[in-house]
Length: 275
Image (cartoon, rainbow, N blue to C red; front, top):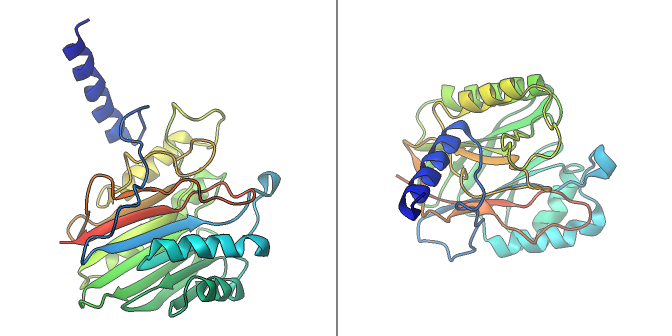
């Protein structure tokens, strides 16, 4: 087979897998490049900071708070959505150690830190038995952004479907905003090539859940590679393309090398531009 034909077939396969939400090895899995922010961009971070707890999961341990705060300070984010917190007091300590001057929005194990602009909590609930928050953020430039964050169930596809579906509905049913996005640890592991065990109890339902979420929202980190160990893409930033777009091809992805202890997720960073 000629080199040109081989390359054409490879990219055709990549396009098919992208449509299905699956990954292809060696194509665009560079992660977040840590570039300087573009003026006027919106930097969003979503990070499950908890530990594996030998399979059962547990909240961020206090001994690792300083390392997490150091990463958050280095990111110079506008909005950071953290999952697997022990509570508001832990979010307060992280905010203080990350440089201060941050607005805190908390709903138990899910917390939001906002730098610059103004932010307010619109809704906090246990959607589908899982924590979800909906916030409104107004940038210093006056842009009005609606954002939802959900930490979906790690083992039940049905509970993931309920939680993610409820978050998508809440996000899209409210009008009058310049931009909107959904983020968080959605626990959707659709990459068949990397999976070494059956992470889901219903793969077809997970594909349907992903399809529902991306029917009106765009998976901004689709080609950026795994966000959690070992080689899983569980964390997402899904944007409404009418209001947001990544500032560049390498502007969304996991920042690797920042995990501490038995943490299994990388912070997922998205540099976005308001249309």
